[in-house]
Image (cartoon, rainbow, N blue to C red; front, side, top):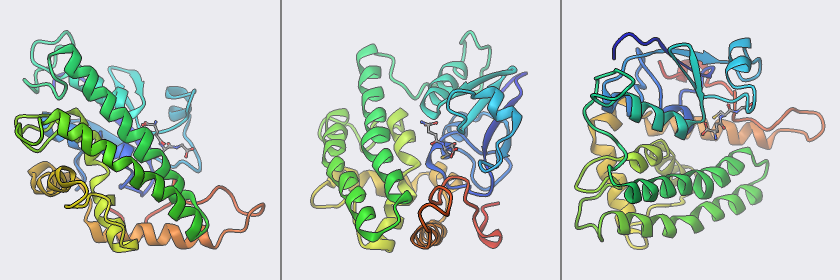
Length: 273
Ligand SMILES: N[C@@H](CCC(=O)N[C@@H](CS)C(=O)NCC(=O)O)C(=O)O
């Protein structure tokens, strides 16, 4: 990367948020997926969501959420918007002037780009959103109901992967032709959680029989250098998820704040460094 000063804001201690994971992290064990793939260097600032900084409130006054990317002094908000921004700026010859990468995660063909954006939105809306509700749930029943919605959306994603890869003939990633693409990066942040859920509750979301392409995707994605470099160890995610579940179960409505998850700290010894 040339001349640009980057900083991403994320919240304190977590290191495993799926949103932030798509764009962070430098100088730590959790190098982010897209920046890793594109070789972009940046500085990273953590944010305590229980005590939001003026910088975060100034940069993202609408949602007041992380991640935020600051590039050349200008903020870019929302993880998928940030991914697209990075993809556009850090392509050789682009007007951004950066030349760290000669490839784009999004296809050149406008219709294929639209298809990729559709499935990336599907991951966030149909899988990520109910999964977040599950994290925030106080009871097993509530959590199971939300996870049921996540599971119900998985066959739709299998269909998307089938279409994007021509039934697996083009490779195993949404990027097609064996290459990692935009949807893979978006879904990649979820991968450790898919493994973790199996350990926590026995729920196998990407199942070899019901969703064979996604099961193959999960395996092949986990074998990638970028996944090994960026994604957290599954056992750590399992520990974190169990801790959040226990804290939420112990909450008393009306007395306690929002259920745990956002802004909730990893125990210091488990913090991803
Ligand atoms: N749609 C947003 C969602 C980001 C999001 O939910 N961020 C959480 C942390 S993972 C957050 O900052 N929440 C604000 C809060 O908890 O007050 C994105 O993709 O960037």
